[in-house]
Image (cartoon, rainbow, N blue to C red; front, side, top):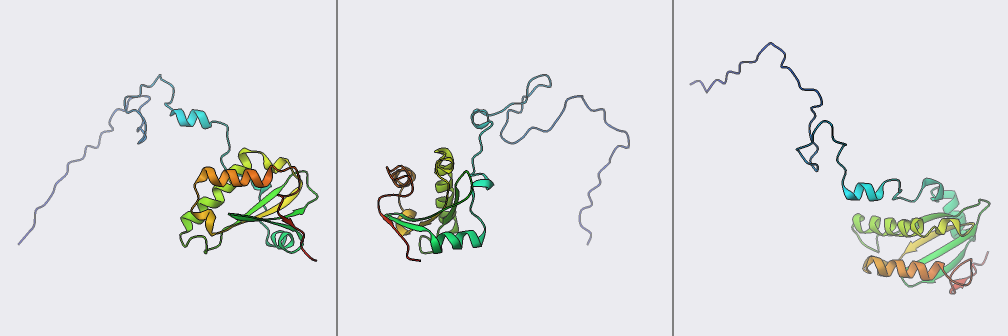
Length: 174
C-alpha cells in the first residue's frame, strides 16, 4: 500500500523583493517601517555605554597570584565571607571570588554570588581605591542572604577607617 504523495510546485522565476524588507526580531514591533530608526528598548538605551562585568584588568585570575595572596596576605573574617589581601605594584586593585561547593551544590547559586560581588566592586569603583590584590571567599551564609544584604556586608568590609582591610584584620604568620 502506497502512502500519500505530496507534490510541491516551485516557480523558477525570481520573486521581486521590496527594498528595506527584513525579518523582525522576537522582541520588537513587527510594524517597523523602512524609514524609521531601528527600535530599541528602554533598557538597552539605559545600559548604553555601561559595562556590566568587572573588567579583565581588575580580575585576579592567575593561580600563582591567588596562591601568593592566600599565603602571604592579610586575612579578615567577616560574617558571610573572608577577605585576603596583599599589596601589589599596580595602580589599581585586582579581585578573585571563591565560592566553594559548601555554599551551594548548584553552580547557578555560586556563580550568582561571584557576579554580585564583582558587580558591587565595579559599581562602587573599589578597584580604584586600593593598590592590592583581594581574594574573597564566600561562606555558607552568603548563599542564603538577599542581594542588598550582601552589598551592605561588602560595603561594611571595604568602607572602614582602616584603608587596608576591615576591623577584624588578622596578620598572617609567615
